[in-house]
Length: 219
Length: 105
Image 1 (cartoon, each protein chain N blue to C red):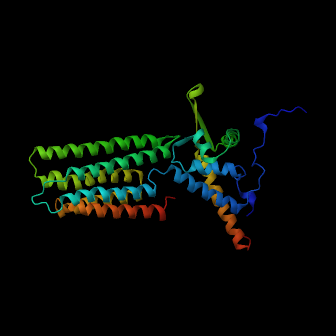
Image 2 (image 1 turned 180 degrees about the horizontal axis):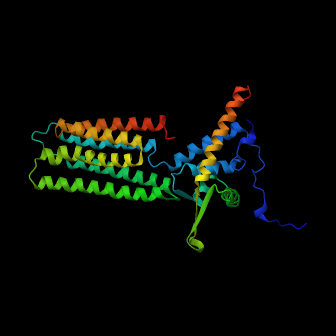
Image 3 (image 1 turned 120 degrees about the vertical axis):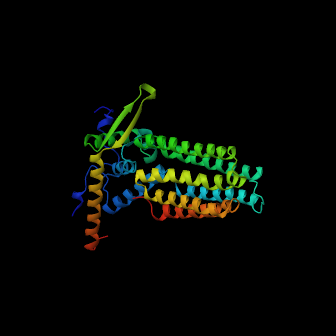
């Protein structure tokens, strides 16, 4: 007998292993949960980070505009805080996204690209519209208050709701509707208070959604 | 119900993990060989052997893109594979329920 063998005929190490049904059930469940965690684009921890960022960012703006009569708008320092917070979330989101999608190809990748274009278009449109409001002589209370605080939530929340409904993703649809409701309701509070209401309300919604993600995971 | 009701192709630790991992992907998605190997911690040879067995049974499909060093292999669970995993899961649940009812744990 020579010392070589055909590796393609080699029995794999675990082929003959007895797999107890209970062990099989445990292994199946563990593997399923681990895979879902690894492919998850919006893990609960990221949701909590976003909730904290909303509280800090919108809270900083509210702190800078509270008591303004007439309303002028947020200070440069507050704007720096909110933009830094947004950048931090974008960087973390990109890292999570890269980790979750490495090696994954197919329909979901194409869908995400399409959703990204739609979402990006909505965000740009809202920003440009804010410029149009300023150009058309709208007051500071609208241009630098109610509109940037609540208008973004309304438009982006509605876009997210439509995308979630198309995917029959009821959890995300519920979240998006809550965001739209927060934007709509908070607008009645005026240009200064709207920032504070969204800071707290957005944080609460985020924490609630993270709890739903943990206690009611996807099947 | 006995262990014989469990699909022998899936009722092996490595192949069970392969099928369960691929099933976590959305329909229509595939996973690269490299990522799958990284997630499961199997050696390339071991993984290839198990993938071939599953592919021969029609439970998954593999697709190779690119040439030479840049070639990439991706793996996806087929509809038959998903159905096989669903059937395996039901059979396993029934088997365990039967064992519990008869006093074995």
